[in-house]
Image (cartoon, rainbow, N blue to C red; front, top):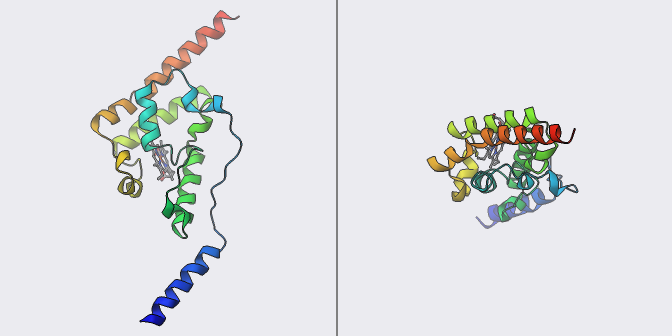
Length: 160
Ligand code: HEC
């Protein structure tokens, strides 16, 4: 019994030194490109995104203690890397209008189908379990993007 425990402990220690197949990166950011800097996305939508999405879909990932221990750290880094590829809310402002509209619509569909946030994340993060009101708020996101596009258009027309 003691030997088995020792071997398990040794395996665990070796795992911590193994090269990680995925690692979380962090690059310098432009705060003006973050979705939090978009004045057309109202607070109730921003707050759902922050609570339930931005750990994966932004550069502002809060890593829990178990997220620093292999192999959980690898799974976390893989999820976050893939999530940032499809939608990085820290680079929201860098997206063209059509992309912002497509993403916000896909987000509404994904939460309605309970595909997002991911089930394993919901299990560990009670604050990310969305109520019908949260889902309704998030589904107002495409409309906010449309309003933002219209406002930017009229601004650029006025400056011409
Ligand atoms: C635990 C990490 C995690 C969280 C939290 C999370 N996502 Fe994702 N999301 C992913 C990953 C990984 C992908 C890409 C692979 C896939 O679709 O499974 C993805 C893909 C997506 C996509 C594109 C694919 C599709 O279904 O159309 C959308 C839109 C999306 N997420 C929206 C959201 C929204 C909105 C939230 C918050 C309510 C959220 N996600 C929370 C990890 C996450």
